[in-house]
Length: 255
Image 1 (cartoon, rainbow, N blue to C red):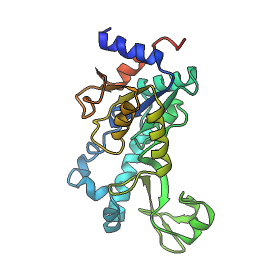
Image 2: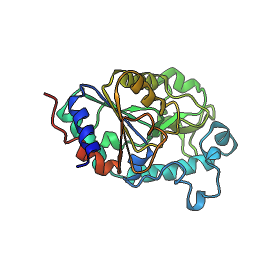
Image 3: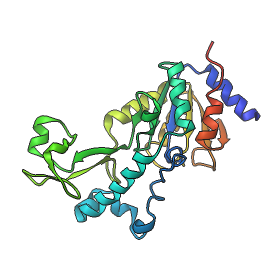
Image 4: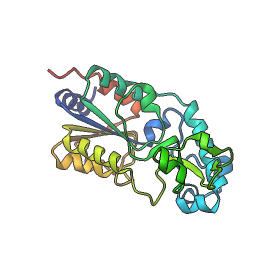
């Protein structure tokens, strides 16, 4: 074990509150391509901005819906990797000590058994109404009940024609307020932040590492390559989440 790995294990053992920020690299190890890597084959000729923004959906709803349908198939077929399982097991052994904040829109953390996952960028498997709809406002907030929507690409409300869209955060949209506030609380209140599998280029998510450090937490980056948050970190572990997290989270329990 390297000196850096041992130092990270020591910090973990001492930390009473741990915040883990996960990014696309974590899901990539389960076979879910990163956002831009998903633009392959049939989709390689498209601009990601065309497929992940409100204007793109308005211009060609079927194109955007079909792309997300293909991504949903990949998410459903994927399985949690050793990194997801290690986080869930640590939570089980140390209730209330570790919070997970994710930029990923899949459900691999949940399927691994993690609880209370804070999802900054939404849920790709969730359906939402694209615009205001008399029926859903009156009955169930902004979660789409498929029974109300007529089948199609995308489905639509048979009463007002409102379209169904995936429940992710598109370019130009605000992050869910409740999720962002919860993530900021976790970052401010932690003794140790692990930044796992993210380039650190997407804000405001990447800003959570800065928040944690300013509040006095140790910051450890786990990534195979250099990231834009390496300068914020007290230590950087080079390696993938599926390899590094199981080793790190075997640290002795807090005494």
